[in-house]
Image (tube, rainbow, N blue to C red; front, side, top):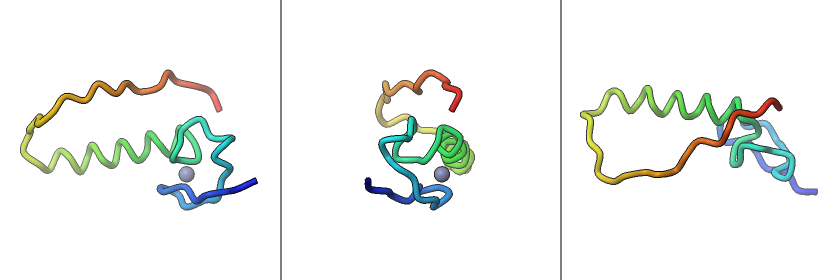
Length: 61
Ligand SMILES: [Zn+2]
């Protein structure tokens, strides 16, 4: 079994057990997304390219 550190909380987790790679959990993924969006608000709005990536459906643990 190999473990890797979550980029957000730095906790070691098993990638095979995570529904929210590269994060350890959906909670961390959402937290990182929120942080990213907040930082994005400081920038002038621009949409250089369309991103069709959809968020995964919500899951309970
Ligand atoms: Zn985490």
